Structures are given as structure tokens and as C-alpha cells.
Length: 242
Image (cartoon, rainbow, N blue to C red; front, side):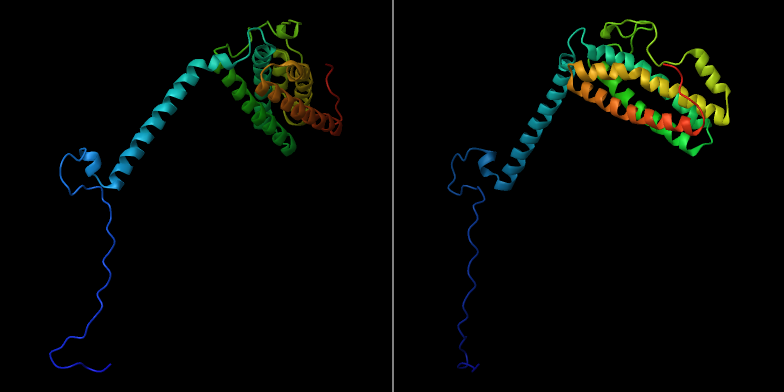
């Protein structure tokens, strides 16, 4: 580039001015509507977002309270078999868990320990669901002792498959293979005994989640019953009479 005359300054193009930004400030003076109109856009956005968040939180809390107050209305109608099924099956499951815990804690057979653990885990989870629904609906979580299966039109003092106190005492008094056989026999009879209640609820229940649970019980306990039958045969033992 050639130099210009001494004392002269070469013309340099100035950079473009940045565009004007509307920051919400009224330079004309007068009544500008207060803080809202004087505030930059980002500040107004923060305020709006905060108001929306407060409204959402208030709505969520209100919905939770409303749900708690109206939850019983979503339960089964009075006298429905769903209630009787859940209350009776809670008692039935509780004994199965009791036997499974004893077997898992005392057996030396890995296959029996795994089976007992599976039964304990599955039925404990189902127990929690059944008792949770009953509490949500404001209903007792268990049937009145000695008054079972009235919802099936066949009231009885003892549900099918339940082990007696003498059965449980004999089971706990044994060790080794004899204890394993006793567990398989008692649990197999227990599974088969509860099947009719599960099938009744699955076929005639009025609350979808309860009938779905009953169907899953039928499937899982039928499979476990087949496994226990095979295990008994492998150990030269037979199932107990129903």
C-alpha cells in the first residue's frame, strides 16, 4: 500500500453501529405504566415464569389433597368380591411368606433356597399391593378370623390349603431333606388351595387392577406348583391330600 501525502490521514471505513435494542424503557417521559413497562424483557419473563410455577405447584398440591379425599370413591362397590378376595388373600399370602422365610433361612439345598426366596419375594410384594389398596379405600386389611370366603358364597372358618398350627410345628421341627419335603408338601397344598379364590376374582372382579393381580397369581402359582410337584418326585415324595 502506498503512503499518502504527509499530514493526511487515509480514509478508514467506520464499523456499523449495533442495532437498537428495545429494552422496554420509554424515553419520552410521562406515565409509563409503572415498574412493568420500565423493566427489561428478561425481567418480565422471570416474573411470568415464577407465577406459572406457583400456579402449577398450587394445582399439584390441590390435586393431591383432592385425590386423598376422594380415593375411597374409586374402590369397589360395597359387597364386591374384590374386597373379600384382597382381605382373604392377605391372610393366605401371609402364611406362605412365613413358611418361605423359614425354609430359606434353614435349608442347605440351593434349589429349595431359591424357590423359597422367589415365593417370599413375590408374595411379599403382592401383600403390599393388596394392603395398600385396602387402606386407600378405607377398608380393613384382613378378613375377620374364622369368617373367610363369604364373598364366594361359601363361608368357612379355614381357607383351602392353609397349614394348621400342628403342620407348621412339625415343619419347623425337622431339618435337612425331611424339612425340604415338608416345605414342598405344605407349600404345594397351599398354592393349590388358593387357586379357586384367584380364579373367582380373575373371572368376576369389578376392579381392573385387582383382577389383573389375580390373573398374575394364577399364572405364577400354577408354574410354581408344577415345579414343586417335580421336586417332590425327585425326592421320592408325594403331594399331600387336598
